Image (cartoon, rainbow, N blue to C red; front, side, top):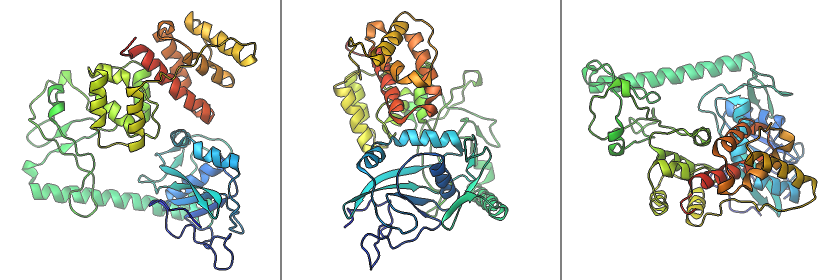
Length: 424
């Protein structure tokens, strides 16, 4: 028996053979691959990239690839899959391939056996290309899904893929031209949603002033017609001319890296609450939020109220962030005394952090350095020194183990609280 299937999973993905209830009915094909166990390695990333460049697909862990027999993941591997940090997976993929690849991870039970499913979304921007190497991946590789194989793309398919991309851009262009024709060339203007400039026949350009930001409503996703079309942006407010020398950049998309980097570099950002909103839409709850709340001039109660009102968010992440705000655990580790090797490493790092001694980031010892940061009290934190160390760790996050990266997130949140807390 199969547990209730997620809407993201095709209803026949776990369909069983008529003759054997431990054999899946569907064979491997260009959208399905079976794996006996689970390991997020380069071979798995090749499969993911191949699916992304074709029509997307599903990777089932806990199934023999030849016989299609359900064997299930071991208890350890099932826990590894369930606890696997999707944000870390996305970071690893985006460090290996570009443009970005989107995946989902779900653990299901079929006839009492644990089956891990990775859903790979078809890439909106193709081709997805390897931007760094590591056997058996070479920089510049483009992988594609052929039947039951995921391998380097053939010329004919690459040519077809590029033609498809070109055709899509031409189609989008004609939709824009058609819209301009309906509005009237003399009445139309074009907005650069990345830079914020708006160009038209009667204006050179204009940008949005800081005073008007709160009066503007952004519709981030929409369509020109009832059929599928290009995303539109609606600005509601009084637009006025603005001094180009005092230009303000309005950021429409705030990524996970943007949230961490602005905090670690102590940047003053425009519309700081948008960074908190973006945090609530991530897969992890561990993002610096108090730094942005300070910039937005929000008390703890005001912050809670505003986060409650966010509608464009992941429900679970938003709830977890509200729990943090309501009763902050501070993600603090007690500084204990021990003769263990781990303690000696951590204590040495702790002393170096307090005395602002230069620290070389060693991946092999990163666990102890991250732990040492989490033992610091607010009075012990030397802001510029600790933030510099955290920045170095964040730069090499792709080399960290999953649990190390998770603890690095918590360390960043701990320092965020220590530097911007409301109570101490």
